[in-house]
Amino acid sequence: MGGVALGLLPVALHQPGSAQLIPFKFAVGCVRALVDFNMMAQYRSHTADPITYVEDYLDTFHKMKDIFLEFRVTKRIRAKINEQRKELRHDRPKTREHIAPLKRRQMRDAEREEETERPMELIFCESHFNFIKMHLLSHFCDHKHQFGNIPMYSTEFGELGHKTQIKAGWRQSNKNDASWQIVQSYSRQHGIRMRQLNLESLRRCGADVSPDVMEQLNTTSTTTPPDIRRRMLNGRRDDDSNIADFSLALGVSIQIICRGLILYSRHNLPPERCLPEDPEILESVPVELLTQLEIPVLAFQEMEIYDIHRAGCPGALNFKNHGSRNDWVWVRAGMEDMYGALRGPLPAMLVALFKIRDYRSEDRMRHLAGIQFVSAVNSGWISDIHSLVTVQMKEDAWEFTVVDIETILGLAHLIQGGDRHWIVNSPIDLRTFNEVY
Image (cartoon, rainbow, N blue to C red):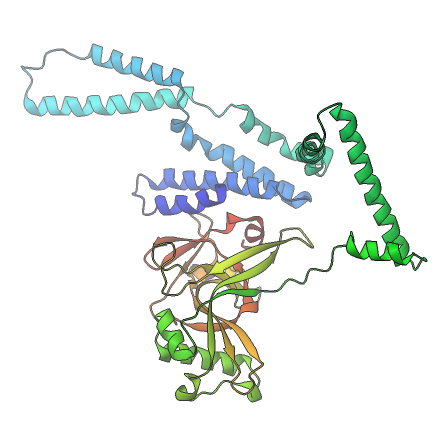
């Protein structure tokens, strides 16, 4: 939620006036510091440098948080403001018949200004952020030094054990002396589990295990098979068979698609497997158009856990009756020292997902994607105002660049901040937050 708010705030506060520039900058800076604190606090482990960053983020937040004091108005403060407004109106002169119209207008303007400024003074004097959840943030770094990995003390494991052991056991019991039944049932399950692990350990060591036990172990193995993660194309469409149908389904001209395919073939394929460059032959090459790409993304600070990103591009088809939708994705576009804070990958709009058959070999298929790249503003370095990267779609940008689906790294979260300009919302997840800086 915080990551989404940080991306939307610069868009909502864009183009401030001269009087609004400083307050807007403080508001964005305050939210950015709190979001950065929250993101880095979620790291599974911390060294000295991340803890220093966390302390700096919290100090920055406390320095800028007063910009939101006017929204911390309690019922008691609101009652004081109403009482103050009544006193101001009571102390004003009752009759103004003998005052010139210009003078009366000036007096009314001064009274309105006073009615606005006096409550704000009271709000800034009475409002505060002194509540327990805000105070607990100041103890985070001390607790890290004292206890180490804080997630070890999470109550989530106890709650999960209560759900799987107590509640599930209660439902399976006959509700008579349920406590004894729950303990016995869980003890049997735990004993069987330990027995399976011991037998598997013996089998791996080459011990003599009876065929019946071997068959049972193969049936109920506790060893997780290796998970080979690869990108998968789903959602085949039936309205295409060649490049010409492909062009009609996407709403992109045949010339642009052929140019993209020829450039991809020249730069990525060996000479003996290049696509034909004759447009008439290329337009007849068999093509399958698809609508979804599943991308396995390694979870942050994990070695075997993957998040599945599902990127969609239905082409010219409507998405849930609200027009076509083309997702933004990260594409490997350069080395780590390129594009500033983006460090290699670039956001791109997913235009098409397709399989193209090698016209020389019917058994060979290439899984490709058509994308539209954006360029990084300010060479990809973060903005001084909102600390996020801005990208733009140039007027002369190619509408269709062909890449292998293996170069697509995952979903990107971009928020439109103007005409053909987008803000890269890097705090949307821990992995993007850690990689874009």
